[in-house]
Image 1 (cartoon, rainbow, N blue to C red):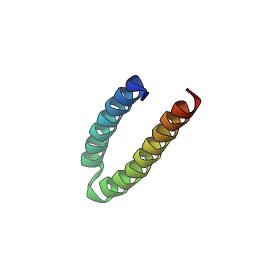
Image 2: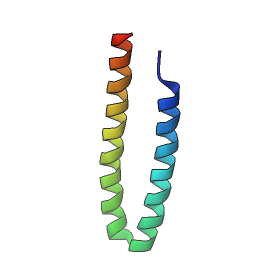
Image 3: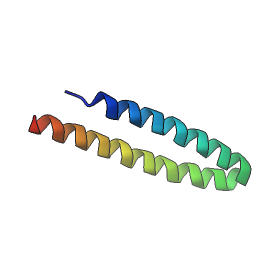
Image 4: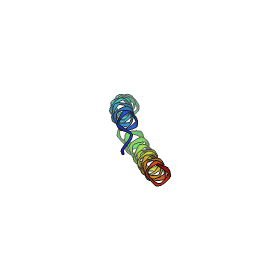
Length: 62
């Protein structure tokens, strides 16, 4: 069974994360915005992979 509360938390977290990225990028300028956006995409992929691993591990145990 998939952990629904974890998935909802992840969606909320990502929404806040992208909102922050837009504000910081607008404030700092386009070159910094691009670098910050790339960094955040890498962070996002890491979070998604971690969530998938945790869900898979939970399914194997239970």
